[in-house]
Length: 327
Image (cartoon, rainbow, N blue to C red):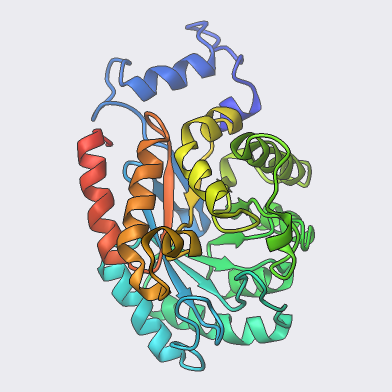
């Protein structure tokens, strides 16, 4: 895949087959000597580790904030309780722990950088003493991301897609860490007013996501270190969220062969559909949103689902993967 990101038409000097053709053969398991039915895409991580997309990847949400929309305050001020929660998520099947020190729910005010660092870094350091599970830092700030990487984080998860603090893109390039570029508009305080799209929401979100990808690439981020997130619940209304989740096949066709992260967990549109005002009671709807979106995403693809209830979603995607024949 890295060679294809550089030039799909590059040809092998002996076989005269392009690297793009080789990749397609590997995907289909057609090459002689391929064991297990084909190649598996990986996401390279620091310290010589990889995430393997031979299954749907589950990212567990660990908010160490007092004001998260779903679970704010539960882990506030207690690194030990946060570590226990992270280790339980790992035991429940999480592949990644996503740690955030700033609420980015609609209407949320900005959290000072030092406060975010004080909330997240001790938790990352303690998890690293107990586990080597991949950790992502959920932040818009390059300073927070840098401190988190030093503490042991492996992935940057930026809900602004690099628009809030463009230096975060250069940081990802310099440290060679993967970065999740989420689609949004405005800031948490203004995004409710920016949920109108001139054309089809899928087409517009894909185009704006590719613009963020292009900016990241210009700043040195490798394509194989890029994950795209359509930003469910960010600058979208209820109809926009549903249309986007149902249009994942078109989103992938328009954006190309990138891993896609989906974050519908306990979002307001689920509550509106199901008539459930308590975010913590929206886990069944979250399962439906994750499974339906991936099944609408067409064959293949590399998927990450970011969720609060790891155990329930992990079981659901394992069954879904088995039915879909994912290896």
